[in-house]
Length: 409
Image (cartoon, rainbow, N blue to C red; front, top):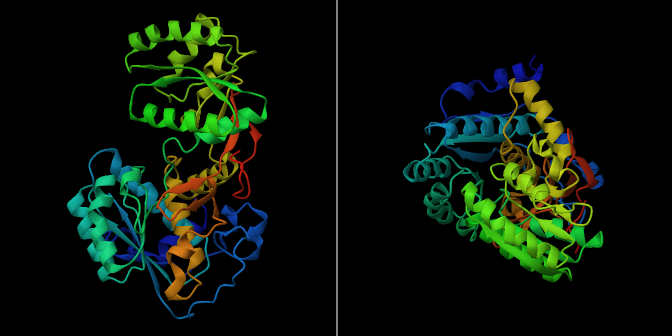
């Protein structure tokens, strides 16, 4: 059953199904409090700067139309089109849950190609967009970048390729390796000092290794054993034997295995096979463990891993499912939080509304996935909760932090 307000969304946004070159004028918006779970959120609608910015906002002209463009691969081939549809719906849901009738959301189809992204960005700029949200793919971000930079407007993209960030291009996505410090820091607070890691031989594994070594060193620990494994099953098994021996010789007290869903079942079987005592060696994972069936692997139950705030995600998932009749993919929160961020800043005067100072404010913003902020280099920084793997439902053992302090746990 769909929520009653879906009818209102359709009634007030007749252009939703009239092509993706049209705009959605949201005239029925309510406070964004549903996604704001920090105490500081009570002071106003939209995302918050967590109370760290003491400068009062100056309300924008009440009759001013503020145009926000959302660039998505709506007509791309395969799975991309479905993801684009869900991102678009999440953005529309965020607009509905705000209260600013002057916000205009312009959705443009990038077609999943660089040429399409460039054309979409050009059209959005010509229609007066003050900020661009998306695109999704790195190649599309690169193609759209010269257009938005020439127009001197910022872009908050959903790509996870850090090479496209900077000079007014921001990445809201979850970036590889940026969660590693959180789990290492938490492990250190629990008395862990001698770290080991078993990493995949791919680009992610290289990023995770660098982040792991840096995090262990900065938190006063020591990497006593580290090995990598090829993507094929035989190689993963062969590399595990000498590595397991090193674990015992070096008396490691924690084992970091960030491999995702494709690797985890086989990694889990190696723990009992090589007699790795999980009462003495704490198993650690990454946010790639954040999938529904992770607890099906008995050997890693009791393992710790960082994840986006599960409370906010579960609340969002429920509202989205009730509204649109399907469970959203995890990435849809990016569009929801991006639109919410832009709406929250819309009350500021145009000259500073989407300035680099506004977008990169130190206190950050509280969104569906927890606290985040955009940095001057274009990368995002997030705070993660720490979860313990359970058979059916993972347990939160360290809630997501409510401020950007020195600690990363």
